[in-house]
Length: 196
Image 1 (tube, one colour):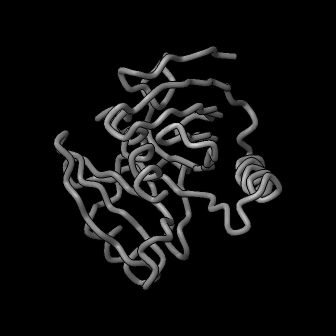
Image 2 (image 1 turned 120 degrees about the vertical axis):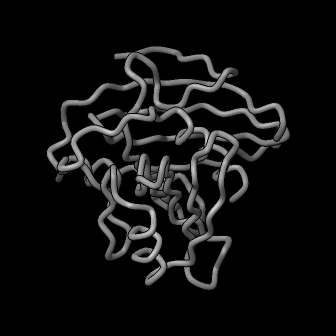
Image 3 (image 1 turned 120 degrees about the horizontal axis):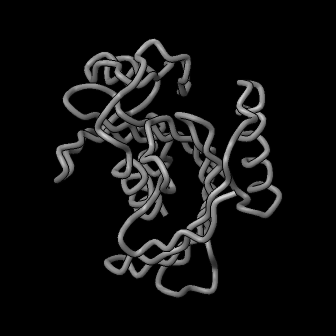
């Protein structure tokens, strides 16, 4: 499950453009006691997150530095991923974890929490997009809904790996600059469904 989730998050982060706007922007994601904003220095973010979480760094082929943030002492519980380009925060992805039991009600509660968070921030002028696709190297199919509100968006994903009868689902909140005119998550095998 964590490998699938990391793949989706990495693909989301790869669609973020290389430009950062308005470092003074009020857009942020909170992880524990850390408020993350586009443009923050990588060292500062790593040091701050390491107080509350285990943080692991990876450099992707695209030159993006990716931090994987997990619960302290529990590497299987993914909290977030944070992407940097040229030492500056470019995107952050926070999972709204669906805890056990992994039921429809738990998933609905995660969606409610994420949408309520956006509403409290005044993010009500949003666009809705959907996409579906495959990730052949992991035998994975997915369907995703994006609620895009400026530099932040929610991602609701349904994932099926290896054509198993049991699908999994994720809810995440992402901060970053997305490519204009395209869903935030556009890989070569993704087919956008619609834009409202």
